[in-house]
Length: 246
Image (cartoon, rainbow, N blue to C red; front, side):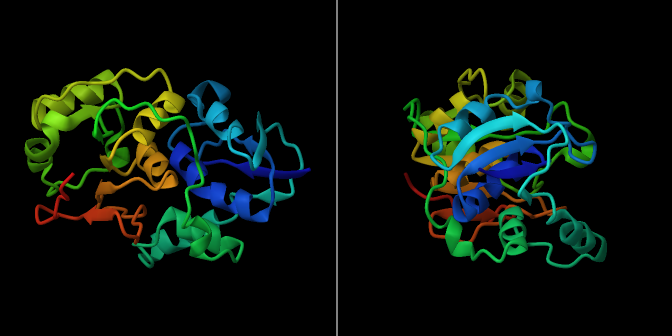
């Protein structure tokens, strides 16, 4: 059985899944590491293990306890850290970095790599992380026109995230109902059921991309590492972003 090890934030791991699909089905070990935004101990997986196990190329998800593995999916980070220090390849996505580590073409991620039973709640799903985080972990594009997003989609939209995130969003952008999701598995179902996802650089963005939904991304200029170049994705750098019709 092929085995894989990944220490990353939740979105990093989602972006690595096309590697497993390409190299061969196997067991994914999730490592809790101090160099990620959060140490992903099992209580922080938030339903990702359930979601991953439903994918045909994931045999199981386990906590890494220093087992030897076939592929260490953390190896890409040395190139990424170097690029960050030098200020190069700033617009290369986490997906691209990870695929390149194994010589896998970007086309390996052209088709959806996560499938889940959709729950149709609203045509538009909004998500904006930030509240409660350290400042250097707040991935906001300060020129992104969230007020225009709310004006265009508000009547067709719901918000997913934490209560604090929802409260701040409503206070700064406009009132929109929140959908309670107990974990990321349920969040993935709500995203799967929508026509358009609008959000910042977050795990929910990577869920939307893994399911190849239509997306408008709020780009964080401080680290634009979630840029996806495909039909159906609009990367919003500033107030001039073109918001698609539903």
